Structure formats: structure tokens, C-alpha cells
Image (tube, rainbow, N blue to C red; front, side):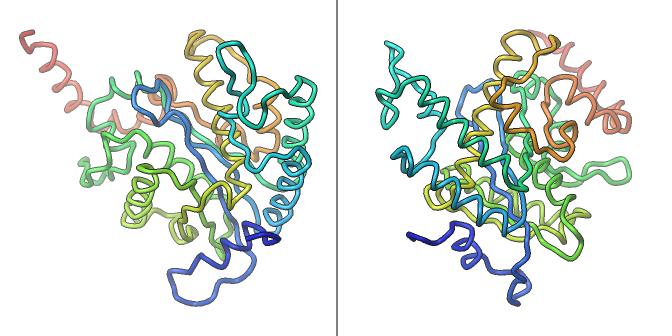
Length: 307
């Protein structure tokens, strides 16, 4: 829709659960994933949230930066992609390093110029796969009451852990009288999974749920904000991958691109979580105390099973 902000289009498309017209002031979060393909060592979900007016202005500036260099839509994988000879691909073919740096700098300045805030989570798959099924159920939505876990969660879908973490953390920043709406890049099959997870969260009646609005699946071509989320998710994946390669216990600083993308975080320690062994141990600490006997019994039974 030429000349119309993607956020404005989204505002028209979103309808409230209560059936009445939305107030114009609202929060909007845009999320994208990276590493959700089969065999990926890390699963990432990341993006930004902010007020509707901030996004309207952001859309215009981001689109202007792209028009100035003749790029229709930013995709991080394509932007950083190279052929076997190290040459840039697609619309970036023939670009000098100086042009690449200037373009990326303009995109990052656009992100940091508006009151939009980064949020994200990543799961290390090798650590996820070592968890007991009860632990994976709990981390993906299983509810505990009276020493029992009484909802199934999604133990075979690690994507739900960063999903539930990001939705909850963003909603916690939303005032009681507002709602925060979520947009995920239209990506099969994960858009279907995201919708299922969203419905599951609604059924769980978590404390923040009254502040959670609607879930939509626009394309990144329609929503420049999703292109910024793609950049953040891609860089988060690369950072987590490099930490994994170098050893997660080794202190490893974020590079300048990710550092800039994270510059506006409200609370970096809380808003960005890497669920490696240490991260999983922390969030499972209380759960393991309650289910200590069951977890130990199953672990011992597994060790005693003839190979």
C-alpha cells in the first residue's frame, strides 16, 4: 500500500477481542525467528516493541534508507550472504565495503533514533535435548499446582520457550490500561505454531494476559519493523553460535552491530536470555525442588536400563 505506513495498515487489520474499537494509543511488538530449521544448534526469537506513533515514524525512515540505495526489502541473510568467491549477492552485488558500512550504519541509526526496545531469547538445542520431559513441559507452558504438573505444555517444540518468554516480558512493560499487540513474520510452518502457542497462553490465564492484544502475520515487505526484527534475530543467532563454538562458559562480547541493536534495551539482563545449561538450570531451580524425587527416579531408571 504505497504511501501508507505498515503500522497504519496493521492498525486497520487488528480487531479487539472485546469487539469495541481500539484506542489509537497502543504498544506493538514485532518478532522474527532464526535457527528454527531442522538440525540448528540454536533456536532464536527476537524483535522490538514500542508505541504505535514511534513505529509510524520508524517505518517512514527505514523505508527512506532502503529507497536511497535501491533496496526494496532488507533480509539479513541476503545482506550478509556471499558466494564461494566471497562476492556479495542479489541487490548487494558489486557493493563496496564502504557502501555496505554506510547502509548498515543508517539502518542502525534508524533503530536507535526511536523509542523502540529490543527483546529476545535463544535456546541451545543440545542442552534442551538433555532435559527431562517434565522439565520441557514446564518450560513450554506446563502449569504446576499442588506438586503436580497438570497441563501438557509443548515438550517437543523448543520454539515455545523463547516465544512464551518474549511475549510475557514485553507484556510486563505494558501499562494495565493498554494492550500490546504482536506481529510475527508470515513463515510457514512457524506462523501456525505461533498461533497455537498464542491460544495456549490465553488458556493459561497468566497474570499479564489481560495486557496481551492480538497476533497477526504480515509479511516483512508490508512491515519494515519486521525487517529490523530480522536483523536483530540474525545477529543474535550469530552471536549465540559463536559463543557455542568458542565454549559457552568463555566470556564473549557482542560485536558492534549487535551491541548497537541492543543499545535501547530497557533491562538487558532480563530482556535478553540465552538458555544454555546455566540459563536452563536457573529457570528450573524451583521446579526441580518440587519434582526432585520423580526426576531422580526416572534418571536412575534410565541408567539401569540394559543397553
